[in-house]
Image 1 (cartoon, rainbow, N blue to C red):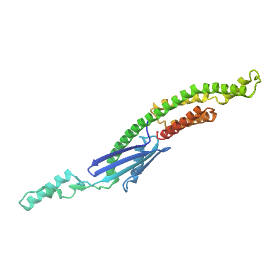
Image 2 (tube, rainbow, N blue to C red):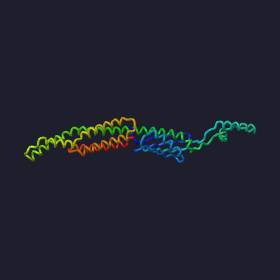
Image 3 (cartoon, rainbow, N blue to C red):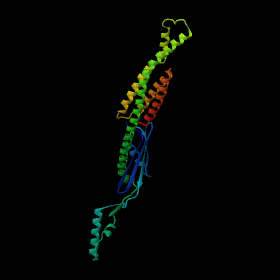
Image 4 (cartoon, rainbow, N blue to C red):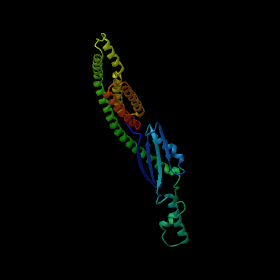
Length: 287
């Protein structure tokens, strides 16, 4: 499982200078990648966007690239031109019969020997930018996966709380009906000396039991919790499905609360609402 929040940073160095790429990711319903590149680099935005999109399925991702420093030299040596110029200097020396030694400085000063490189051209920076962005994207994925493991652990704790509360409700629900029957029988006896019609007490108890029956809700809660566990082990993006299952859990817990005719069940339902709300909040961070 992967989180939608993460950060990746990489620095690349080349003959043109240093380049730093930072990639930040936050929660978002869909996948959205935006770029902040140096002036004049807009032509590379689509390439960078497509590169980063391969690393995520959801999230709002911002890619920032910045140049740091300038090269100590911004020229490229043309060896052939250097040889030609040195040979030309030697022929000139022989022709003019001028004594002395031809120096490196003299050869380097020749036309075309050291060719200046345009430092700010997009094409010159593109290979370094792509390599550095790919490295930053890999680190982004690492942090998102690490955050995902932490989210999975938090979700499992909440799921455990829900499972334990479900067990407690399963044990409490039958006792609620038994207690109601006892109270109703005692109340009738206290109010009248006439015996109740045969089966009338059982009818009243059956109606009460039907109104407050939460067996189906508890069964569905267990099924949803089991589904969540399956999702946590999935290797694909499951954030939207997690949120949907959390909504279903919320619906079941709300129904239990509305049916509750018992203080303990009401308190349990309130407690479970809090856990489900936390679960939904955590699920919204999942890719």
